[in-house]
Amino acid sequence: MKKMLLSAALVMAAFTANAQVEVGYLNGEEHGIEFTSSKEGKTAIEAGHVFCTTEHLSVVGLYADSYVKPGMKPGTVSVNGTELTIPERVVQGNTNGVGNSAATNDFASSIGKSMFQITSSADGYVYAIISASGNKNYVVYEDGENGGLRVPYVFAMENTNDVAGAPAMFAYDLNAIDGATFNEDLGEGLVVTYLNDDFAITQASQMAGAESTSTTGNGVIKFHVFADVPYQVFATGSKITLGAVVFDTTGDATITTSNGNTLLQGSGDTGIAGVEVKEEVDANAPVYNIAGQRVSKDAKGLVIVNGKKYLRK
Image (cartoon, rainbow, N blue to C red; front, top):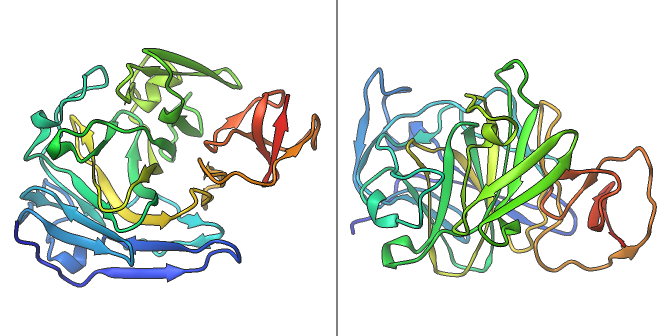
């Protein structure tokens, strides 16, 4: 597969004193994409085109496709308090992925469709910063071309199109699946339902109500990666719009927006240390689980309050 490397944006920044993350941007202008929407036209790009690299990551368009360069949703995104300089025009393919929220693992049906392949040279975590929609089903495969299956991920997006009755943000953690169906009470009247044991999900908007709602906003998909293993990221029945990729080795990044939403509260899936055993903390502070989801104030287990980890029994 011929891979064509054009100029790739690379930013490596120490966002905190204790953790270093890498950030790479997908800039539609730099890759010769001419049109901002498919209504205007599309630009054909060959398979294996490299859209972005960092020290550890490579992001390619896995299959030949036609691309457009839409913008992200209103507002900015920050990692560990540092605002990302996401390009005005990012990258989106044209050919819908195949499948739906109730489908079993079936990568073969999406071969040749629009998807990004992300490969890391080190074990760690990838955070895909996307222009998200509440009525899309996002999937992540581990080496799908060679029989790999869907893998769990953490997803969060904010709603910035002011749909009446829609919550300010959707978030769920597919790492929490245990069996065919799993229900989680997020508090404030929201109950999240995960479907199937293959990490297929209902649309984010349907988790807060029975109807699919076209909510839009910037979002993040976080998943664990192993060195030199390719991961395919796409939307079934639609396309994914990718603006940036973030990589760290700890899974501790905090993702926030200028609209006042915390998409992920830094916690990490591994390497949890220095846990304090306490029954009570600041009664007015918001409480998060280790996936970065806000939970009720009386939630048990490992929780995050004011950036610190506590074990509630």
